[in-house]
Image (tube, rainbow, N blue to C red):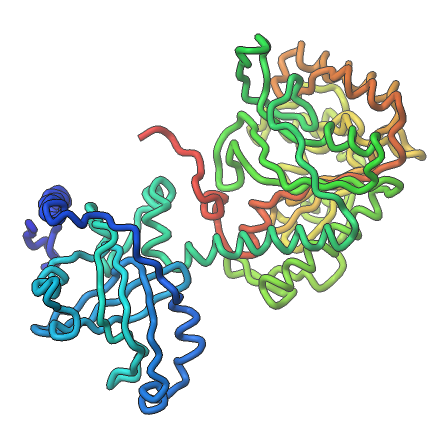
Length: 507
C-alpha cells in the first residue's frame, strides 16, 4: 500500500495501489480454487445475539455454551500475533470475532490463520463458534471455523474521515449504507413510514390498487411529462405524472375507497425538495368531501408520526414541529396577511398591485389573467416558506385547480387544500369535479394554456370524460408526498437524503 504523509501528518492512501494489491490477493485466492464460495449459511443475526445475551455475565454465558453461525462485512481488525479480533457488520448490526490460530487451523488448511491476517477491511466473511464475554465484557464469537466469502477490491473510506463528500454519498449509496449507520437508519425508517401508512389505509377499508405508469395521455397534475415511444403499438407514451385519473376511473367502476403508493415522474428541475422521480400515496373516497379529507389526512400523518418518532412534537433542523394541535386552516389571502403583514386585503385583491410587487422582486409573471393565479404566486413568494407547523391552505382559485370541484357559494374558488409543513407542500387534496361537462371545459382551458406556451398544462383526456359520463359519485381525493414526509420524520434536510438513488448529473 502506497502512503505518504500530508500536512496533518496523516497518511495519504493511494487507492489505485490498494486496488492493484487487492486484485493480486484475489488472483492468489482464485488459484486455491475456493474463490467466492456460496455454501455458507449464517444462522444468527448480530442484533438478536446482543438482545438475547448482552445481559449475561461471563460465567452464565460459558455455562450456556451457545454455538452460533454469523456472516458480514469486516469493518475492524486487530491482529495480535497468534490471535486477532475482528468486527463484522451484518444487516442488523455488528458482532466481534475472536480469531485464534490454534482454533481455526486444521489439517485441511494449516495456513488459514495466515490467510486471515491478509484479509482486508470490507471483505465479507462467515464464521462459526461459541459466544463468550471478553475481559471488557464485550459479546464475542470465539471462532472455530472461518471462511472468506467475498473479496472487497475497493477500500472502504478511512475510519476517521468516512464518506464525507455529499455528492459521493448520493452517487455511491451502497458505500454510504456500509459506513454510515445514520443513513441506513433513515432508510429503515422510510420503509416503516410506508408500511404504517399502508396499514392505516387498510385499517380504514381502503383497497390498494396498481395503475399504469405508461400513459397514452399524461394527466392528473400540471407538470411536464417524460416522453417515450412504444414500438409495437407505434405510439408516443408518457411516464406517469400522477395516478389521479386512473384512480377516479376505479371509483366510477364501483371501488368506493382506493389508494396507491405510486411512483411519479415529472420532467422538472432538481432541488432539495424536488427529484424528477418521486413517491406519493394517493387515495380516493366516495361520498366524502375536502373537509373530511383534511381531517383524515391529519389523522394519518399524526398516526405515522407518533409510531415512527414516539411523540407528536418533533425536531426538524433544530426547530420544533407540533403535530399535537389541530392543523391550522387559512385561505391564500389569510396566509399572506398573517405572515406578511405589510399587505392590506384591498392590495391582495388588486391584480395590478400584485403584478407590480412580483416584478419588483424579480418573479416571472404567471401566464394568466386571473386574480387567483397572481394571489397564488404572491403566496409562494411571501408566505409559503413561513408555514412551519402543519397548516392547510384552503379554497384555491378555480383557474389553478382544473380537477377540483368548484365551491357552491363562490364559483371562483374550489373545495381544495394543500398541506404545508416546515415551509413545504406535503399533501394536495380536493372534492373531485364529477361534472363531465364542466371537466371537459376545464380540459379545454388547459389545452388553450398549453397552446399558449404552458408546458405544464394538461392534455384533453377524452376517455376520462367518457368515464365521468357514466357517473362519478361525490368523491374526495388526496395525494401525500412520501419523500417530503420522510424528510420531516427523519430530520433530513434534502430530498436526496431520503431517496436511495437520487438522480444526478452524469459523472
